[in-house]
Image 1 (cartoon, helix red, strand yellow):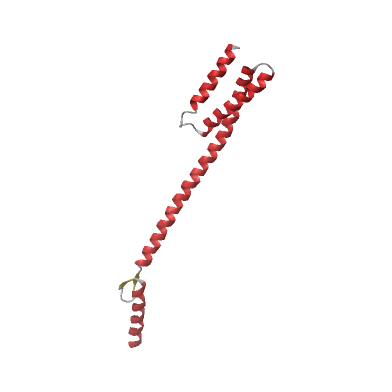
Image 2 (cartoon, rainbow, N blue to C red):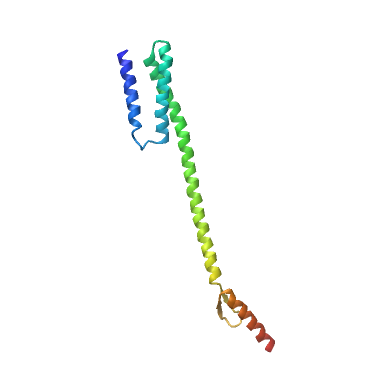
Length: 140
């Protein structure tokens, strides 16, 4: 009986000690929480058959396994969400870069007159050039 109580105490201390670490993964946290819940439930069930230590050890092991599976699933979902958010951020940055490039091109539109080879900058100059070109054609 003393061995079972000591084993249960060690198990609880190890699990509680691991919660002090902030570097635990979601899987590890799930395993710890599952072990605590399983040990508590196992202890209650075990006490009904006069074996609370055995029940707590079995429940703790089963709970740790179940908690680790659930935690691993949650961790996988979190990683997928992070990857998707990073992709969204990259695409947003690319869209912004393209918008700025379009604005720059609109602002610095360069037109080349096919006959004279003269470069005209801005769309306002294009209107003036077209009007001048038409008047030159009419004179000839």
